[in-house]
Image (cartoon, rainbow, N blue to C red):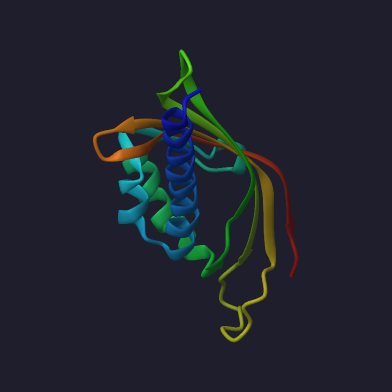
Length: 155
């Protein structure tokens, strides 16, 4: 590989990492406009293993906007990111895949919830698969799949 190809690969990996981080921030902040903007046209999301829905990003974003009101406090920690950029004859291609673990502590809302308490009482964990494509606007998500492995809920 040449230094130019190495630099292009590093820049792609940084841009992909920024998209994955942007995904977590958008969900935690409830910024559904930013969430939608992370996806390429035709992007899909699958939350079915976590009890959610699977479908086009616009439909899933609408569902999330309603569902996440149940969790006024949430924090997605996305770690152990394994980024694989398509290799096209030694040069970076236009698709990528990221496998990353997540830990997601949240606080459930409810009629008996003390608004002064922000400690989590619901935690989910598992692995994300992010599929991305290079677009005219940079790297965008084409598919996000959640593979929930466990969850814990306390009173």
